[in-house]
Length: 120
Image (cartoon, rainbow, N blue to C red; front, side, top):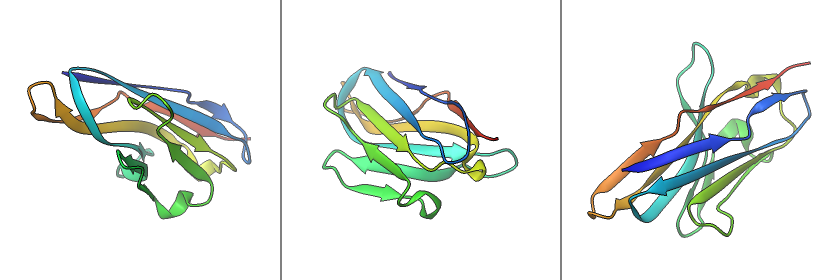
């Protein structure tokens, strides 16, 4: 079983910055990709950013140029640096981790989410 835990959410003013952290633990053989998704009230969950084990990245159109995803030195950890935050970035942010576990079975695990609120 693979566990995913997010941290770093909070309340910030427009134009401010936050960094979210996601850590995966448990029966991990490898991690193929890690990503951040968000869901605002009344809206569907959408891609924010994702990164593969090879370092390839993909961003949602609304965050390009403002958010940066990075794996860091600990390969089971992913960071989301968010700059120039806007009220429309307000949402619950979820971390997703995919790979193979110690039984060589595919896993696709989600965290519980962390709230980001951008308001004056």
